[in-house]
Image (cartoon, rainbow, N blue to C red; front, top):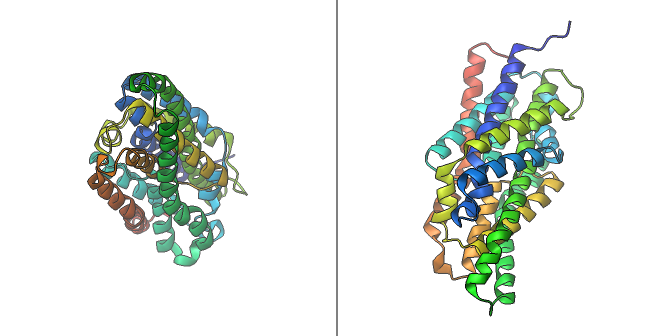
Length: 335
């Protein structure tokens, strides 16, 4: 008779909890600008983001393959049934800490940090795929915010040049409607990149427990992760929405359109490459880029400093929590 190990069931459930918190924590990425400019009501924006996160999560699995086999070596960690559980505890803990304080940190890098911390405690640094981590985590970690800032600055600059002589009220009225499309694009791209990360982690757990032979995302995993993320999105992250939509730069509809469109393009490109980038990093950088086209003093750079500090701390903090969790779980006799 086919039996599923109880520990694997626990790992899957915790992974879906992480996916739920990811949706609640990161939904602000998709809707902060459209809410702050009042293009959509908060309730409508959250509902739209939840549905499109669900759709986006089903559109690919390149990022899932990176999380499933590109961070840790499945062959080396195959005997460690608690590795994924410890990684998830580290990621969820950091998500909850930053969510409590309204800090838009990266759920993606919290999860990656958790995997790294748990794997290193299990079998040292040889359990990691160093080249893959460098190419698809560390380089995108630096490049995605830079690309977001540049894309936001460039797109807003082009809009400003082409509409320089246009009536400001008419311009904002037009972009008031266009921003609904850009927000929808942003929500879909968020689901495409972020939900796949949990898919990859569950797939890695299935591989470790011997339930599958190769890294391939089963359909039930895709559906479960998509639903968990969309459910979390429906809860909303109102503290983070306030930070993203108001504290960085005073947004108008044209600014929201430029920030969302540029961020969506960067995130979609990264998803096709299989890079688990931070949607938080990207949209934040795009907002800064858009704001900088007005004048540098229009952007609250003090907020930027706090965000950067959170970004820097995410990987080591989540790795440390995951490492401690691994040791505790191991001491409790789980394996």
